[in-house]
Amino acid sequence: MDRQSEDAALIDVTRAIVGIATAAADELGAVSVVQLRALTVLGELAPASLGQLAEGIGVTPSTTSRLVDRLVSGGFAERRPSPESRRQIELRLTTEGEATLARYDELRLRRLRTALERVPGDRRDAVVEALAEFSGAVRPGREPVPAGS
Image (tube, rainbow, N blue to C red; front, side, top):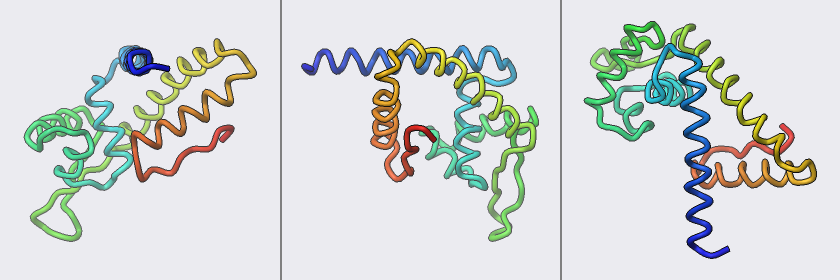
């Protein structure tokens, strides 16, 4: 495959995944895609400092602070004093935040499974394995999820 075809395939996949995430967020209705991204990262890091969350979602701490304000006021996240330092605050998901993320995962998986069912049966395992490998390349340090798990 030439570079132009590779680029087109990568952009198509990106658009498809963003479309799936956006449609799932819209169906969920409670929070924006950006807020869901912050909740997802917070769930992976928890507890997290504001700086860690900002780094995890790739935005500035001031932007993250405003985002956390909205998540806290919505009941999806909470701030607690850090047990390590009274000057630091740690962020955690609330039960509502965890339930929202679980529902978001369900909605995205339903759409992803529908798309995967359109792949010929003899190619599905290869597609899932390639996606797992690609995901590992995008997020180094994360343990890849074996196909069939």
